[in-house]
Length: 290
Image 1 (tube, rainbow, N blue to C red):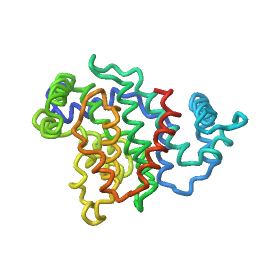
Image 2: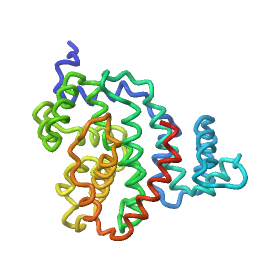
Image 3: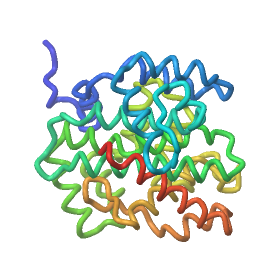
Image 4: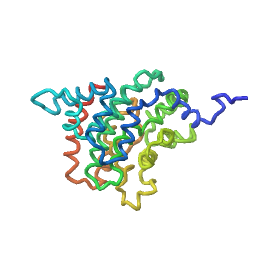
């Protein structure tokens, strides 16, 4: 006899909700895979994007936005790649594609997919900008880690709506305890669920580790060895800052901690103001997609 879904442990039921998500498109899969190759060519990335008409259109719209202040419009994806650079282009592809992929999901009444997308992309952009200023071994995975760091929360909302409602209620009154509350209710945390989901998707281990420890980066096995300069620390700081400026995931507070302290702990010094300025510009350019 086949077991019913309700007979599975809660964390397994949440992961089963992955099946309700629209599948990652082949193009998105290949763009994510390109993260493993620092020397990926402009031509190769452009070739991938040109195969998806909607994606190509969105990239051209982005490069022609006021952010870049170009005197003449850009009508070629390859020209757009040369102007944006592979990293920024890759990030834009991931952010736009993920938001479009989840737009029509059925979620609880108090869930805001718009807030979720805005928060996820905001954290992704800021984490990537921070990683560029640090001697970070796996910094090229910062954007993807930021984009999917709260995927587990989406799975809870879809697969365990009653439990999501309980967690949301606690988040409003006891945000500092949210991790303990998740464990009490689910037997796991949304961060662990996010990492487990990325494992199902076969994303690189450094990205999964950063996502797993983004709430408690001090628990990252590499934290002491790398003197706190880990991708999980970067993700934690980016998440805390984005919550501070009001871009909360689904409108709830997840106990991210002190943003200023988290940023300062990375040893960025006077680079922080420049990072925040770059973030404001990049987010303004991509915001219309959400």
